[in-house]
Image: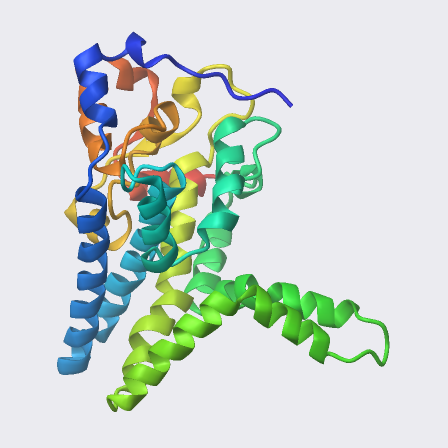
Length: 308
């Protein structure tokens, strides 16, 4: 397998510009983690105080759950904090995902992005799809079917494939061990909220967003980043897509500058908070005209569902 072609930063930025773009921060990553959890906490509180706001708060929390993943993604590149041990500690305990499992998988994606060896090709390969197919996928996400399949699909397949008469229990124990972080953290959260007399708030404003809005915005993110991007393209400028996002899209679909995915693949050393500046500098030199850039998420979805 041949790695994806790369670019040299000095072809696009001055030495001073590049130094500023890749500079790690001892406080920005931490501040973004704090911001993410604060937004989640305030949204849950708003849902408790004003139940009529629940639909909106579910979207807000689900998007910030994606935000935790995005910050963990930065940590996988060692960008969340200049101290690598603290970088990994913060991602493991506050980023909401399995850093050690994700990191090698994701770095392989970067090494072979949109090439034959890219493990994420399966996500972009089906596109374009029909509008009806997109509606079905959206319904599966919002109805919780995608979450159940992703979270429990492996266990269900193993149970179905087990020899006749074999016990299910060892399979359940094995899966529980594999998902122990998810089970423990959610068990503790549910216990804390139950002790406060708010068990329903945990279910309605943490697990429900995780099972509905999070799968949907994760799908939108995957579509925007690589769907309809040509495979085995020799031009690094066209290995991923950048999607412009307005305020509503940033709040409910694309938090923490995840929409600047083209820049991220070109320059993996740039922390997420500097991606907008890298885009501005590239645009000032006319480079973005050669990149895959779309004006909005609806525009991307129209392209992705253009098959008739």
